[in-house]
Structures are given as C-alpha cells and as structure tokens.
Amino acid sequence: MKIKKINRIRILVLGALLLGAVTGIASASTSEQPPNVLFILVDDLNDAVAGWDGHPQAVSPNIARLRSAGVSFVNAHCNFPLCVASRASLFTGVYPHKSGYSAQPKSFRSNPVLKESVTLMEHFRDNGYTVMGTGKLFHHSAGNPDPSIWSKIDGKPAYGWSADAGPWSASAKRPGGGWGTPHPSYPEHHSDILMARLSEVPIHPGDEKALPSNHSGWYLRGKPFRYNGPDDRDLMADEQHVKWVTKRLQKKHDNPFLICVGFHRPHSPLILPDEYVDRFPLDSIQLPEILENDLDDCANILKDINHNYRRLMGIGGEREVKRWIQFYLASVAFVDEQIGALLDELEKSPYADNTVVVLTSDHGYHMGKKERVYKNSLWEESTRVPFIISAPGIGKDATCDHPVSLIDLYPTLIDLCKLPQHPNSKTGRTLLDGFSLLPLLEDPENGRWDGPDVALTMVREWYPENRKPKDMHFEFTVRSKDFRYTRCSNGEEELYDHRKDRHEWHNVADESKYAKEKNELRRQLTEMTEEKKQTGF
Image 1 (tube, rainbow, N blue to C red):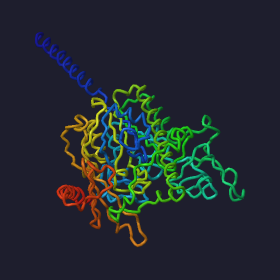
Image 2: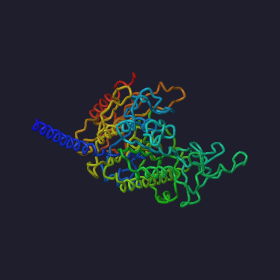
Image 3: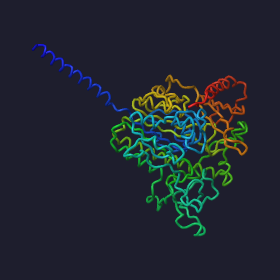
Image 4: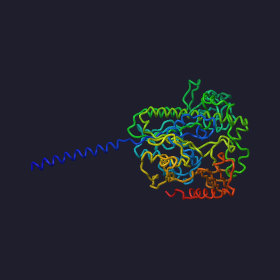
C-alpha cells in the first residue's frame, strides 16, 4: 500500500509537471500577438503621386517611403470610381453590381444586400481586435453611418473626428459653410473646382441684416475656424485625424488593433495652407498630355458625364486648368505630410514591428485627360489607385504589376491577420467577392494567385430627366496587364493597348488584328458580371 501511494504521488506530480509544460507551451503560442493594422484611405488620390508614372511634378516622399517598406500594386484599380459605391464595396467585400449599390443618397445599410454584410471592421472586432477609426471611411453621415461597427471604449464607439472637406466659406445661405458654399473671391466656381489659400479668409460683402458679421471667415464642422496666420490657426480636418491616431498609438493595447483613418485631401474644395501652394509656382505647372478630340472614338454613352474641365476652360483657359493642377498637387503634398506624421508615430511606438500598413484611395481622378477634371469614368486615370501593403515578413521595396482591385483588400487582411475565413453575411451566406493577395505579397513577380487575370471596374449612368433609377445600367471595364476592354450596356466597346498607348488615346476595338484579345477580354468580363446578384436574404 505504501509503495502504491508513493507511485500515485509520483504520477500526480508527473502529471502536474506535464500539464504545466503543456500549459506553458499553449500560453507561449497564444501570447504571440496577431499583427495590428493601420489602414490609410485617401480621398480622390489618383496615380499622380511620385513613383506611379503620374504627374511629373508630384511630391510625395512619405508615400514613397511606405513603398520602400512593402509591396506596391502598380496595376491596382477601384471597383467603382465614386466615393459612395467604392467605399461600400471595399469595406463589405461585395462588388457594386452584385449589391446594386452605386450612388444612392442613403447609407449603404439601406441596401438589401449590404445591410446583411459583415463589414471589415465588424469582422476584426468580432475576432478580438480593438477597432478604431477617424475621418472619411464610409461616405454618408459624416463618414460614419453606423456607429455599431467600432469597438466600444468607455461605453462609446471608438470613432474620432467626423469627415469634413472644409474649412468652408460662410454665406448668408449657409452660415456655417458647407458643400456648395462659394468663396467670395471665386463666386462663379463650382465646389468641385473651388481653390483657395487659407490666408484668403472669406469676407462676404452685403447687408448686415442679411449677412451678420459672424458669417464671415472660415468654418469647419459648422463652427468658426480660427486663422490669424500660418502659425496661429486651427488644425485642418486631416491634421486632427493625425493627432487622434497619434494618441491611440501612444496607448497600451491589450488586444491587437485595427485603426482606420480616412484623409479628405485631395478631395475638393481645395482649401490649403499657403505653404503647400507656394511649393508649386503656377508658371512652372505642366499640363498633362492631352490629345485634341480625344473623345471622338470613345463610347458615346461614356462621354460628357462631368463638366469641370469646361468650367475651368471657360473661366480662364489652360491657365485655370494649370491652377487647378497646382492646387491638386499641393493637396497631395499636404496629405503626404500627414501620412508621414502617422508613419513617424508608428515607428516610435511599441507596435512598429508588428503592424500591417495599408495605403490606398477610393478611386483615381482625371487631371484634364479625356477633357475631364473629375472621377466616375472607366478610363485609367479614374480607375487606377495607389495601393501599398507593408507587413511583417513581407518583402520590401517590391512591385507587382498583376491587375488587382480594392475588392481584394478584405480577404487579404483576413489572411495577413490569420482571422477565420468567415461567411461575410449576418444570414450565413458568403459574400466576399475578392481574393487574398497574400501569394502576390510573398512573391510579387511569380506568386500563384487564385484571383482573375483582370481587374473589374464599373460605373452607373447618372439620372437623366427621362429615366428613373430602376432603368439605369452598369457599364463595365476590365484591365489586364496589357489591355483595357470596356463594354457598355448599349453594346459600344472600347479597347486600349497599354503596351503602345498608356494614355488610352486610340480605341482599337474595331481593328481586326485585336479580335483575339478583345474576344478573350469580353469573355472574362461577361463571366465576372453575369453571375447572379447576391440577393434573396
């Protein structure tokens, strides 16, 4: 009995030691923190940034700095070149033509398909991440249409500053400023092309009864914006976002985090501190290469959607177009410095070595080509976006020219952060349309990717007086490595050979020598767009 008792004790001790060893191993493995994510979304940032073969005078050293730390997808495209639809698609992982959500004036949560979707933020939050955000991420309701997607900190959603494109000029009509408010120096300017220095503090002349003195000056978020000089002023909205994120990076986080920041510049109106405008003297500005009568061989249904280029030409000709480019480049330089400030803070933080950084834009922007100064087209300047991913264990200073799109971001972050591959729907149906870019991050040149050989982008016609939204059709384009093929709802086609024609000046859709390429791209476009819509919830 005595021996048996001793043996029993030995067995219990040995069992405890083994259990402790196993527990220790488990603790060590579970203590390995999943990577954090800093997601930077810049509004209306086209491929003009330095290093993307865009405008030769672009200055963006901090975006270049991030490029050197990760993989740049140099043939990346949005799925819908308009803020509303692009952002909803990006964060839900659902193609716009499958949800039917394009430019509706309501939140994406009103859409029958997207209201059932689990957003990127929700998926991270539901899998142990602290999810925080500030600025313009979604489009409606000041960029934050659904407070429930953010983590709760001290009982409140972890969302910082609302989106605001200001500061704005005040007027009798809109005392707090806002979209459509003219600046007294440029009363004829549409808000899409409004340009002003911060030093040009607006003072609206007029009857004091109609326009009290407190309506003069700049306004931000409906409140007076103080400007007494370049060194004595309130922070711009994008500067406020940097400050908010900085405070979060300086805190200790027990859980991995996802921080999303939505910068507004270079979105219009282009109101900027003087120092950025001064970096680009007007007389030195280069106009983009513009082909006369470039629209002659384009699909008729895609023409004349926007008139900003003609507005600028009517105001002051090419010099006014140059002035717009001056302010756009200044806006890029401004937001680049905000990005640099975020990267500085991340590098100083304890999270520097374990954070995925993503930088992209919701769509591109025309700078005069195709007689456009706007977005919402199916041509390269409108669809192409900067797209950079820097992550632990991923190669640095690498480029990938395989066509990809923003729809691929959601599944890529799932893979990078080793989250569950989940059904992206509150009703249990899988809605993610994209493919993880992880194979291309691991091997940018030869990675075996499961995704398509083309990137898909679409637009939807505006609402003419004689048509109703239910009658509207999507128009589609696909971008391969060497070609862009567009097929419209009325049967019109465009084909551009990027090996010879990076400006997309010559539509070769009707040339017989390109029949093979056109037919193959038409097949791929049809295969991607004629799938049944994600409905029936």
